[in-house]
Length: 305
Image (tube, rainbow, N blue to C red):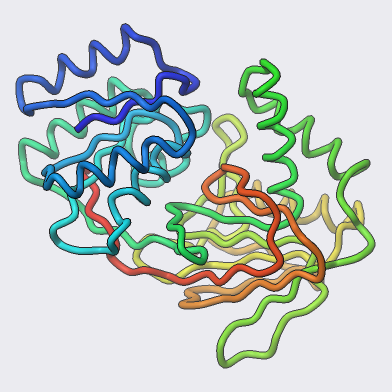
């Protein structure tokens, strides 16, 4: 089954038809287009129940996240269809972390080669309460930014890096609470970390991209390990500038500083909030939360790659 998001940033009817034609010689392909948010999860679950061999997600990170959650609705299993990803969103973090070409044509070529060779890779995922995520989750400022961007896009704005930068600056200087940290990070067997303003939970690196530039608070995060956690205990201007600079530097060292919290290879983490805090998964805003339990799920899904 090919699950296609017709509203993804870089898609068109012509592109979808070309990709379907490319796969038709190798697969008995059924096309299913999403009609609303959450529809890809429904379609993927139907594909899993119908014992499809492969589900192809044609869309951005949100479509991929929904497909993953639909496929794993009954939990990880060797019987779950493998997932192939054709990136046509605005950022495509998961596809890029897998090493896929950023364009749908190049990715199609790679996926076809893997299908013909019977090649796949099992990757770990994160889980936030009852929902899986492929590359990141966040509570605090980043989720506030995503909420603001989604509101702008709903009003007709195009998704581009400048939209995120503008929203981040607006929220930082005039929106988010920079005086009262709300978060406490609780990891089994460790002392709680209090006084945290924002937290990113990463299943791979980088956390995201600004255009072609990776943003990397937790560069050691990997599909083959547990989760990595970044937190900030200050939203003053100078510490934030230092943190952002560290995230943009190449290399494998995490961001350091007295105001920074880093955790590597975490199996379980509970984030508690003193007040409702904005929450996002894989770049989609999911409302406000007072508590989220994160877990690492090793080798959760097979990816055609």
